[in-house]
Amino acid sequence: MEEMKDVVLKYVIAEYVEDDSEIKYDTPLISGGIVDSFSMVSLKRFLENKYNISIPDDKATPEAFDTVNKIVTLVNEYVKK
Amino acid sequence: MAYSNKVRESYLETLNGLKNAGIFKMERFIHSAQAADIIVEFPTGASLKKVINICANNYLGLSSHPDVIKAAHEGLDTRGYGMSSVRFICGTQDIHKQLEKLVTEFLGTEDTILFPSCMDANAGVFEAVLTKDDVMISDRLVHASLVDGIRLCSAMHDTFKHSDMAHLESKLQLFQDKRIKMVITDGVFSMDGDTAKLDEMVTLCEKYDAMILVDESHSSGFIGKTGRGTHEKCGVMGKIDVITTTFGKALGGASGGCVSGRKELVEMCRQKARPYLFSNTIAPVVVAGVLKVLEILSATTERRDKLETNTAFWRKGLIDAGIIIKEGDTPIVPVMLFNAKLSQDFSRDLYDEGIYAIGFFFPVVPQGQARIRTQISAGHEIHHLEKALDAFKKVGKKYNILGKTKQEIIDMYGM
Ligand SMILES: Cc1ncc(COP(=O)(O)O)c(C=O)c1O
Image 1 (spheres, rainbow over the protein chains, first blue to last red):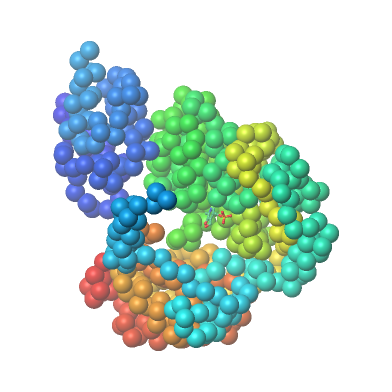
Image 2 (image 1 turned 180 degrees about the vertical axis):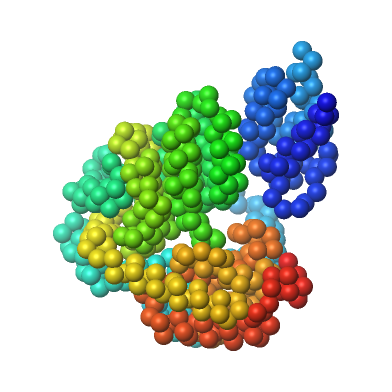
């Protein structure tokens, strides 16, 4: 199965990147202005649907969503339970 | 007196930062009424100069139309100058209701509520009609005033890629569970002059049971066969749930805006929209002017027809001269220069040639997409446009951009 961090990276690129700027696992997405904090909601929904989890709103902070690596860490907290 | 030096210094630092970055905005003073020919003082203190204005939102040339001025005078004489009240206390005159009715007829909607400006309409509408159980799905290039209104609302918010219908559909699927889904777009986008695909958007909204809100500020009065707006052009009149628009551009250009659409939704704004409840509405003199504007536009399509002819002439003229413009058919015609400094230099040289047009660059438009946004008016005569074309050719030749591709211009000047 495709690794989670690649799934997330692929989604972020398809969803938010409209030029050819390069996104890596540790590229700051929200603080770097690539994902506006508004658009986080669809990212959250995507993760919840894909991994069949529910991330509480107070955990879905801009900080927790700021890089692909951080997102994966967050998602893993809920996947295991 | 707590304006300490420390505070002052911090402001000065920010302001100097803007100056150093070349994004400090300066006003040019106009010493005449708004029109195709204006008298300008620029830079400040310089002697006055008569120039042709090709950057106003005065699409129909009604800003200083004698009939509109006369109607405004009459409004001033019969209804006075100010209301000294918000609408629901003692700030509603018969002419305010009359204007709401006329706008409703003009736009082909169910009801209309006036706001002090379209900025206020956009700031107030979402919070008044949506709750946290709802979702707003907006085009990524909507106007700043919509973005602010969205921020003030507790509903969830997501965006779709500019005019990308497949992406919008995926978002509508994603939020199927929401109580109300509202799709949000500009009718004509102010920076690129392109038109929203309202017909496709309405179809999607019907399929997924979503409402649609369109900001028609750059369309009302001249887009569509009888100038009703983008919904007329796209064949979806009566199918737009909410239209917001301004009287500060084509419709006389003074000020004021409105929310027009489904009856209950407009009533919700009357009960709940904060800029309506807590700020004075449009002054009587302006209401009288807008009433005349709508009367003129309902009687004849002459002005929007002339605008269409002028726009076609202008677009063809620029293309024939080898200048790169954003494709389209609206009177917003961006001349693409890509480099920020080039856009500033070009604008200054145009001014020397007697043409008033402004360069836009990041952050107003994306990085590397600096431009001069030209806006055509029914107030222009062909001789104005010919003179402006000559100026663009002369300045274009000076900077060696005529007939050049985007890449060639970027190679010369950088992004
Ligand atoms: C798309 C759009 N909406 C709203 C506004 C605001 O209009 P008003 O001047 O009535 O506040 C503008 C003006 O720049 C605009 O371009």
